[in-house]
Length: 311
Ligand code: SF4
Image 1 (cartoon, rainbow, N blue to C red):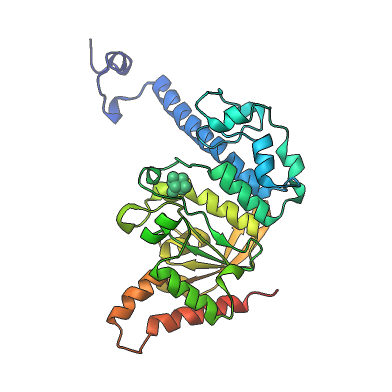
Image 2: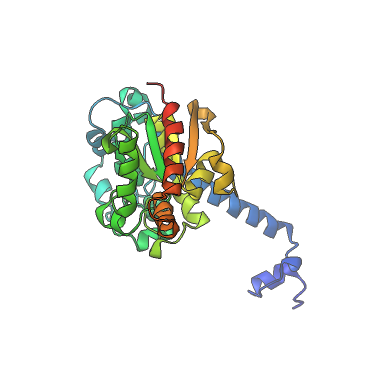
């Protein structure tokens, strides 16, 4: 058999170089595979987007969730026949929710922001396994605070203490954030705090692009539910995600007020980017005692953010 014949080579399982793959059917398979993967992604996150636009049903989201929308293993809601998946006995939610799901969308019109968040956490995030961080986390760190908060803080990812407690910003960095919030004349319970990535990256490394891609739809859904007046990005990764930039220095992001936009949800929220409290704590080790330059810089940024709040 001639190894230069791509079709035969494929049948024989011979690994071909990219140059050899010229068979149009092979190309069609490749495109179909990419399309299928994209479709799976859309279906998986369809529920998240749906919560977004959501309009929610009256009553407790938990009760409605149990009644209306069982999850399959991937966390995808089964409210539409087009994405109904094979039921297995291994899914407790499915076992306890045998009734077919009615159109939740139409019932979803009167849910509060808190109910949307509860639904998002329970039904869409669930015991999320969408990225490799699921294997090493202790607890998912969803978010905390007032669902109707005008000011929303967005960090990068949970650290050690957050991973154990399941709450964002509870370690030393959290204490510093609390001090900042108090310096603004607010309390932690009056703002909302979340991270771009909901599970701790091992050894507190930066989140990988895949992890951000898989997890950030949940942050976006949180923002759509809360509809804050102002977003504060803590750190470079949170800043880049919220302003939609691929590569930007903290210096350039700090210098102006950006806009977080989701046209489909009618959302345009000002974004102020500032340093992550962990960075400030590290910097302070190098700053002369009492100098507090970075801390003062952050406080100035936060006051700029607060000045944008109008209610
Ligand atoms: S980081 Fe996000 S996407 Fe990854 S497993 Fe945790 S919740 Fe799921």
